[in-house]
Length: 363
Ligand code: KG4
Ligand code: ZN
Image 1 (cartoon, helix red, strand yellow):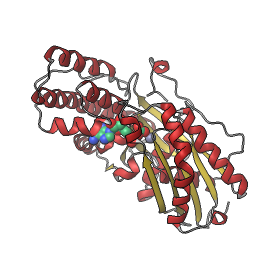
Image 2 (spheres, protein in one colour; image 1 turned 135 degrees about the vertical axis):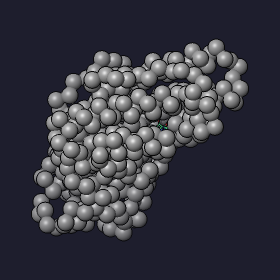
Image 3 (cartoon, helix red, strand yellow; image 1 turned 90 degrees about the vertical axis):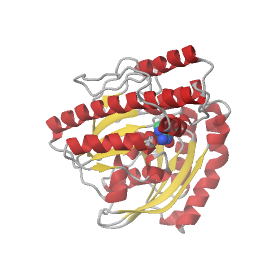
Image 4 (cartoon, helix red, strand yellow; image 1 turned 180 degrees about the horizontal axis):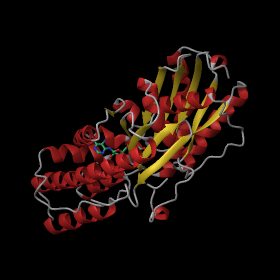
């Protein structure tokens, strides 16, 4: 691959409940440009069940993906023969959906005789700030979504060190479960944030998980149980109770997150020197209170906080295409044997924390 030529990559994302495809250009100077970015969220399909149902997600990906890819190519105004590569998220995620995306990418690669790149979904989140603002390595990533909660040192393409992770639930998952137990609709994160805005965050003294620990790991499950116990005692819940429970839960998450991230940044500095930035990604990064807490942590650590626009924080095809482009210029191409993976640690040296086997969060 000639590094000095612009390249065009089609990216496909199907690891959870977003069916997405995008075309991204990587210019000769390394800058990125999004030519198209089509995302179809399956929120409605899953709302009835209060969470993502893997079989329904896989079936919806089958029904939707061809049309989404077609739309992405048309919006970009290019033909398949102009693609430098096709990239798909090959995991971690719900395996049915991953198979749909990866198989579609393989078919396109075969028919159009173009390279295939099997991208780690977490790597795609990790590299997104280089698409939006060409930031240089190394930087510190806080990734918090419905499936992941990690602090990662991003040292280069394919060079990641996980500094912290959740030992039980993912942060978005905890928001969703708290919402569900309080009767708020799915997805719960935005609902909890809204209710918290008019609640009293000091009414309930919920635990601040992992506060003061020397490692940078998270734990959300005990906090979630504490909210459940309190809610059960108060039943029937009035609106004020719901608002105060949400505000008190969010206050505990904020304090714990700020503490975990400041330890994470210290661990980062020990290994890599000062980070170029603290970057956040994942749906939870859309929460304004959490963004505020991150801003404070970054300021204390004398680094810049950088959050890609919300549409690129949540799952999308552009991040997959961009990770594909970053790998392509380094000659990191995959074969047709590339396997879909339900679990795929970003950091090859990382070991799973306790509770990993029982959680969808420890990918
Ligand atoms: O990254 P994302 O769109 O999908 C994956 O899970 O991969 O993240 C969705 C998660 C959900 O758990 C949702 O409740 C949470 O992010 N979320 C929020 C907010 N918006 C979305 N959590 C807290 N506050 C929010 N405003
Ligand atoms: Zn994601």
